[in-house]
Each structure stands twice: as structure tokens, then as C-alpha cells.
Length: 424
Image 1 (cartoon, rainbow, N blue to C red):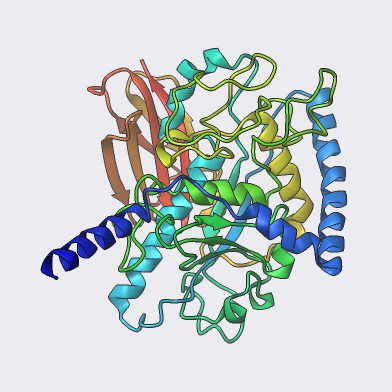
Image 2 (image 1 turned 135 degrees about the horizontal axis):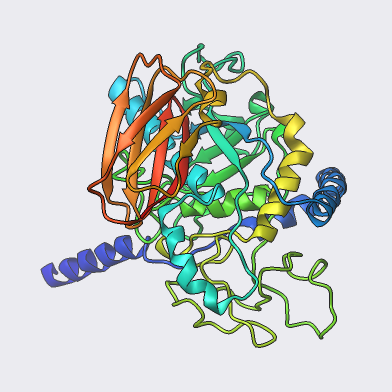
């Protein structure tokens, strides 16, 4: 009997470990089946796609006829919900979850602006993908801090992070939180990491739903610890891509030559067409795609592990940005208490490249901020906080730092912006 109990204990222990040793799974297709089977939801989806197509063609025409130039940074208000955390009366518990939420926001800000440190892997990988370049959306996600919905218990100055809320009894949308980019983090079982509708609607209070073990980075909070290989926040990057009308890079078949890349697969021409998803961590160029091309396995819209996905293409960035432009009016205004957000998006670093000495120049006064400089491996080479600042610029001297590519991250309140510099 003891042996049987011991064997069962070992078996259950192995099963509990294997919960997180799964391949990436995404519930977007199931969510879309649900939407398309509802006549009203289907009509709303088709209307959003029609509106998107107008913005998409407008953006494509601009890029074809004018010199490509970045548009002004778009700021998107975020709300994060932990509906199952009902014991959040402790300040310590709340602070832990707020910090966890911010780690995730930091990840998507880096990923959607091509400032993530592991994008440095692309130059070597790009040899397998001629004509493909990385994409940058120039957006900033910020957890809202004012003008919260009535009845939420939040006051101006509080971050829009909620605990124990019903959120329509487990539904995926809540009109109370219309106008926000909503993330709901809850137990979805072991078989799925997260899901989002394709072409989501902030006006309807729709959400990106995430499982408890693949949201944020670091050690997490009780019951919400990020688990390898999904512990770098890339599942949110992937699911948020769906919300912004990006489909998987795989699926379908290798259609005959002459078929338009604008109507087949993910409808994006700089993502090589491939029939099957990739898992794990394949080497660049090791997976074949259609037409003698190589699968873009490191793309955020594939299924590889978090450490092995690190880029959007320019085509994906254009498509997602067009969708954001088509729904930008749905986001709630005046949700940020600090004026640092607008100022922070307008700083410049010069000279760049440099010999280790450079200046950060702000367009407007940013009174309290921090600066962190990391190398391509993520190692911090400089970090400092600046409080009660009254200068529009700050000089930095890293003359003893080795030559190479570095990433300068400036953080003020809920806003994080990262820019690349080259030290020669």
C-alpha cells in the first residue's frame, strides 16, 4: 500500500510539473468561432474589418508614395484585472500584483517598439530571410491612473489594476471597462495559455485573457508565477497581436504561384507562407516554409517558446498600426494623471553613435525618472534615478564601457521608453 501511495505521489508530482511543460497553445480560433456563430457579434466584427481596410489602404498608400517616417507615439490606456484574487486587502499583496502587471507592460512596450534586447539576434538570422525587416509600431501602453470607471473603488492616482472583480461572471468583455486595453489574468486550465478575439473592440470592453502562469516576468505573486518556457511575457505580445488584427504566420496550404499574399494566410507579404506552426526553440532558417523559403520561427505570431520569439515584421507593424488607427477613437481619454507620459515619448539621445558620452534631451520637463542602460545580453551597465529634476537634458559618461549596441530605458511613472545607442 505504501509503495502504491508513493508511486501515485510521484505520478501526481510529475503531472503537476508537466502542466507547464507544454507547447504554446492559443485560443484565438475557438474565440473567433464563437464570435462568427453569433449574428450580432459577426456583423460587428465585419464592420470593424471594413473600417480597418480603409485605414490599412491609406497607410499602405502613404508608405508607397512618401518617404517612410514614424508617426507620433500613440499612448494606449491599460487596465489589468485579477478576478480570482479576492484576498487583496493587504497592501503588500496589491503591490505585488501591481508590480507584476507593470513587468508585463514593460515587455509589450519593448516588443511593440522593437527595443527588446533580444532583437539583437535578428542581424545574424536575417540572412535566411531576404527582404524581411523588423517592425516598430511606435506605441506606448500605460496603466491608467485617473478618470477610472465609477463603482470600481479606484481613485485618481491609483493604477487601474483590479482584484476580485466579477468581470461579468467570467465573461470576456465588460462595458464598465470600455475604452481600455483590458487584460484579464485568470486560471484557464493547463491546456491553453491565453486568447483574444481577432480585431478586438475597446469600445465593447473586450479583453485579452491570460493564464496565471504566463503573465508578466520575474518571480510573480502567490498563484501567479510565470513558468518557463512562457515566463518572459511573450504570450501577451502574441495575443495582443490578435487583438490588433494580426493572424498566425502559419496555417492553410502552399497555394499555387500567383496567389496574392494580401488575401492568403495572414494577409501580410513579408511573412513567409508556412503550413505548420513551430514549437520549442528552432534555429533560424532551420524550418522550411513554402516556395523554398524559410519559416520565420522567431516571429511573435508563431508558437515558439518565449526566449525564441523576438520580432514583428514591417508588414505586421503596418497592419497592426492601421488597426490601432481604426479604433483609436474607442480608447478613453484623460486616463493618465501625470504629464510625464507625453514628455517621455519625445526625448532624444545624442550623439548616436558615440564614444560612451551622450546626452538625453527631453522636449518637456520630466521631474522624476530613472535611466537604465543594458547591453545586448540584458546585463545592466548603468542605472540611476533622478528626482526633482529641473533640467531638460542630462549628460551621461560611459567611456569605460566596451564598444557595442546598448539599450537605454527611461521610465517615468507608468511609462517606459527604450532606445538603442551604439558605443564605438
